[in-house]
Image (cartoon, rainbow, N blue to C red; front, side, top):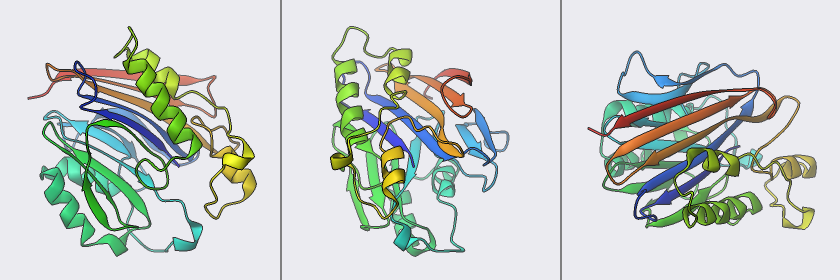
Length: 255
C-alpha cells in the first residue's frame, strides 16, 4: 500500500516533483531502479515476480505510477498484475490520455488500482474502481490506496509537508524530499479510514513510512524535473526498516 505525492506545475523552477513510497511484502523479489536492458530508455525498479513496476520515467520525460485500491471485498483471483500498467505505458510510447483510454476498456482485468500517467505536456489520472479518467490540474496532489486526494491522514500530512518544502529556501533538495517520506508516525485511531482490513492493519498502514515484520516500505523514490528539462532520480531501497538501505542516483536531460 503506497503513497505518492506529486507537485505538478506548482513551483516555477520545478514543474514536476514526485516523491513516493512503495510498500510491499519483503519477500517479493525486486530490482532497484535502473535502465532496463530490454527498454534502455526506461528508468524504473522492477518487480521480478510479474515484471512490472510501480513508478518509472523514460528519457523523453514520460512517467507513470500506480497504487492499489484497498478494499479486500473487491479482490479477484487470476487477474493481471497492476504493475504491468506502468511498464506498458513506459514501453509502448503512447500519449498518456490515449493509453488510459485503452486501459479503461480492460478495467475488469485488474484488481482495483489508481494510475497516474504523464509527459511534459499533461498529466492524467484513472481509477478502474470509479472508472473516471481525469486531467490533473496544477497543484500538490496525494495518492494512497483510495482515490486521488482522498484526505487520509498520511496523504494530507504528506501534501502539507511537500508544500512547506517547496515554499522553503531548500526547494528541490532531493534529500529534504526523501526525509518527508521517512515519517513512521501512526495516525490517531479516530482519524483512521475504514477500508475492510483489521484495526491493527489500518493503524499500521496509516504512517507515511511503514514498518512491519513481513510487510513495509521497501523503497522511497524522488523524481525532480526542473525548468530546463533536467531530471534527478533518487531511490532508496530499505531492508525491513530505516536502519539499512542502499541508494541509486541518476540524472539526465529530457530529449
